[in-house]
Image 1 (cartoon, rainbow, N blue to C red):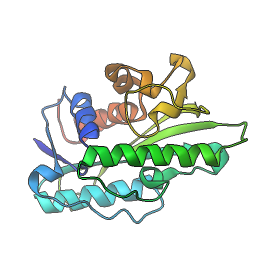
Image 2: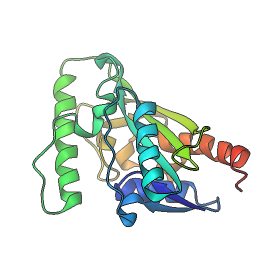
Image 3: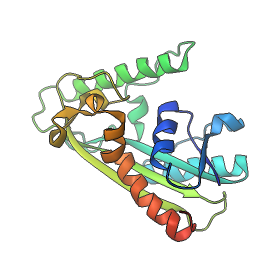
Image 4: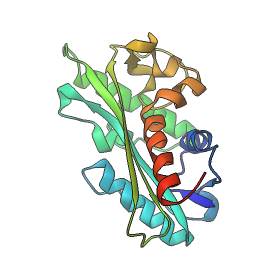
Length: 209
């Protein structure tokens, strides 16, 4: 079964392929099919994920999956939340997409550290909401949510991952997310937790596996 990922993020595609490898699914990026990115105008992860999944399913004529995820910081009332990817505003693009993403990540991290200057309570969570549809008009979207609690460090550590990973300290691992091996991150991350639940739903409702 082909499952179109409603994202052009190469690292997110790799993560989801690894996490869904045990199911009879071919996960492909929407860009490989010429599907444009959907608007994300909503205030919640679930609304944006559903909008993206429906857009990709309608454009591709088949099943689709979307992930809307972000960082929610307690002391900031849940911010940056759904605007995590562009918390610092959209940076000037570079010719290379991944270089632009790195520039954006650096700007977002700097903005977050500025917002938390002098703040003692730095508890937070990465949150992932996954929505999977058999078609754009599927009346039973599969919805799975994963939360990965941690805290924000005063300075980045580690070279792996992306986004806020260098700032997110996981006490149980004695490391930031950026310091974890990809296999370990996939096993315990917010997206990994959401996918674990989503696999259960796919087996139950879609009869996969």
